[in-house]
Figure 1: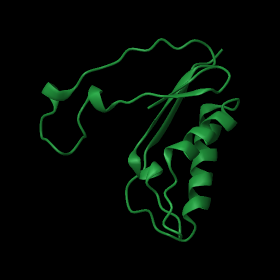
Figure 2 (figure 1 turned 45 degrees about the vertical axis):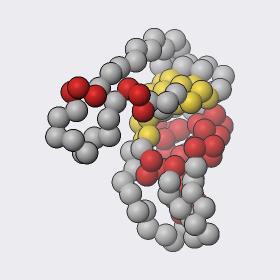
Figure 3 (figure 1 turned 135 degrees about the vertical axis):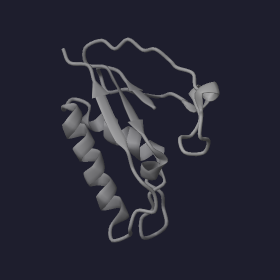
Figure 4 (figure 1 turned 135 degrees about the horizontal axis):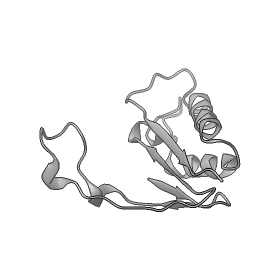
Length: 113
């Protein structure tokens, strides 16, 4: 998960201790925790799956978390939908003619002013 402040500064938040990967166990209730965040105007969070960061291009280079963070920061002044669209477009450019090997999920949440 990424936390983004009003200026578009990205902070990486490790969510692994908060839960368990969906689909590996039939009942994950004993593994799940939560973290509460209060967002002020212009702040937000970006939730994504490893299908994005691990998407490889034709040279077998992954998209990567650094590139995702850079795209979020670069487009943070836009709406949540525009940020999401910009990232997906950049991801498509990155992978070129390769097919995705994993599913991708990207959720951009941005508190309105």
